[in-house]
Each structure stands twice: as structure tokens, then as C-alpha cells.
Length: 433
Image (cartoon, rainbow, N blue to C red):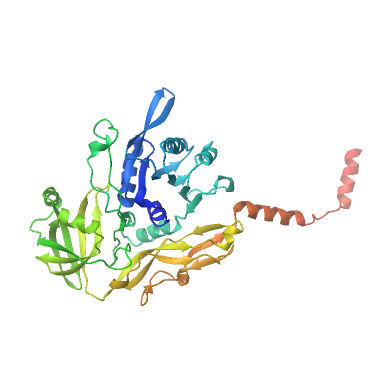
């Protein structure tokens, strides 16, 4: 969710560096770099005394003049994030963006974040924020759709893990030696991790016919030479990968499924070139869609490829991100713009696949909302498969304004004066006696 936000936020990611605020967050930074692209840098956090640590050095990629992105699962007191931000500013970073799942924000967190000079702070609404905890650069993402989809999948006995396999993967991020990161040895200064991105690819996922939505039109098909798989099972697949081959399966159009192998370097080159449809040559012929690509836990290595037979001119189902355009009128009046849904499913022809869809929020007032019916650039002939009436974005009042209005309404009401009854007066007289 955080990766999707930054990939479609308009930030210049061609000059990005993913920063780990300490050694314990290296794996997380690698995962985000795999999806977003860019180099990776690590803030060296050293203990100077039994009760004090200092963030002073940067290991890995160059940060001067770059756009830095930092991620954390939780921001509690914000000590690590703001300490890392201080080091980055000292090293001449262009701007800093922070993404976190849970915004606990206790103790001095808000004051520290205010002083950290962040370009943006993106968190989810897993923990409701008070109005005094929301900074001007804060953006809150709703987890409602994600949780709802997870509940539906559990109810239907479908895979929940697939929800987290549909992450965008940058073709510029290459498998790297773990020792370069100091995971198996001491840290080495000046180690470059990854390489500058050439534009992210959003790999397909899900259990229906889905494809990437990272190009407005299908690129020229790459050719992959494939061979039939002769051996099966986990151990045999591991032997294939060590030999530079990938296990794959081809299915679709009512034909028999075929187990294949293909060259790892050739397939990774196709990903870097932005291929969505490939021409198969060898033991299987024809065009195929990259239906699903399974990676290892750290997105370092492709484990398996699903290929779906396709024919020219046919329609497929894809999930396309939604991007907001313009500044909402309600925001200028002090409201908050909240995007609840970030992508929708559409059926579209192969030759007119959109990169993203757009909603214009220019005329959105406080209390108004937009749905999929308001999308301004749906390709001709495309059909929206998601609920067209589901709210995608709305503009709401700030919590503080609602409390003030409620207080004013309470003050305007005249209190009811209740006179004393005869029995009450007699009881008071008895007490005085």
C-alpha cells in the first residue's frame, strides 16, 4: 500500500534512495527498493554509552541531492526516523519522505516530526489520529479495502498471501550479495546497492486473468525460448534455478497445461524491458501473458512463472491504480481529502491497457465524494468490474472543526429551568429544623 502510494504520488523516483534508519531495518529497506527501485543506504547507529546511541554515518548508496524514502512498521517516539532525517539533511539530501504502517505517535513524537523537515509523512489509519497529531505534510491511507478483501478471501477459503504478492517490482533492482550489506560480515562504507531505476513495473497477481498496468500500451513482445520440464518437485526446481533456469507453467484457452522451463537471465531481461506479453518459442509456441511471477521472501530471486495463453484482440481483466488530479475545493476551505480506494478492476483490450486512471477532485466540496463512475479517462470499450458506486475519495471536515461546531450548538441551546416542587421545599424545611 505504501509502495503504491509513492509510485503514483508524482515524486521523482528516478533519483530515489531507500534509506534504512538502522541496521535492523535493512531487510525492510531491501523489500521496498525491490518494488520501487533506486539505491539503498543505511544509517549506522552506534552505541556511545550504555544508555545512549548516535546515528552519525551513512553506509551504502550516495544520498546527496537525492530523494530519500524511509519506511517503518511503527512510529512510536519517532527517535530513529527523525535521527536518520537529521543525518540525511546534513549529507545534503534533496527531500525526505517517510512511510509507516502504524502511527502510534506517543511522547515527543509529534514535536520531533515537526522539526524533522519532512517532505511527506504517509501512514495508515490502523490507529486513528487526533487532529493535533496530523501535520500539514501528513497523508493518511485507509486500510479498509485491504482488510475487507482479506476477510472476503478467508470466508471464501482463498489465498490471503496473494494480496501481498501484487506489489510493484522495479526492473532496476538486481539480486545482490548479502555480504555487501554487512549481513554476513562488517559494514563496508561506499558500497552501492542496486542501481538507478528505469521506471517501475507492476507485476500481475491474483487468481483471475490479470496483467500489469505500468504502460499505456502493450510493449513489443519479447521472445522466450522454452523447454518442457522433465522433472518435478521442490528439489528439482531448486536444481533448475541453480542451473540458471526457471520453472514455469503455461495454461489457458481450454488447452492442456504445460510445465516448462526458461532461462533466468532471458526472463529477467524481459522484465527490465517492460514486457507484458511474450512470444514463446521452442517446446511451446504462441503468445502468452505474464500472469503471475512468484518471488522469494526478499524479492531477490524469481521462483516460478505463470504464463497465460492470449490471442490478439481479446480482452483481459486487470487492476489499474487510480490517481487524483487537481486540488479539491474543500481542502482549500480546511477539509481533508481521503482516498479510500486506490485501484479498480476493469476489462480492457490488450492494445489499450491504461497505465493509470484519473479522478478530478477540483470541484469536490466538504461532504462530497467520487465513485468509479466519475473516472475521466476510461479507455473506449473498457468495462468497470469493481462496484461502480463504491466511494473512491471523499472530502471531510477536520475533527477539530466538528468538535467546535458541536460545542457552539450546545451553547446556543437554552438550559431548561426546573422549579422546585412542593415536596422538595418541605424536605428542605425539615432539614433546617
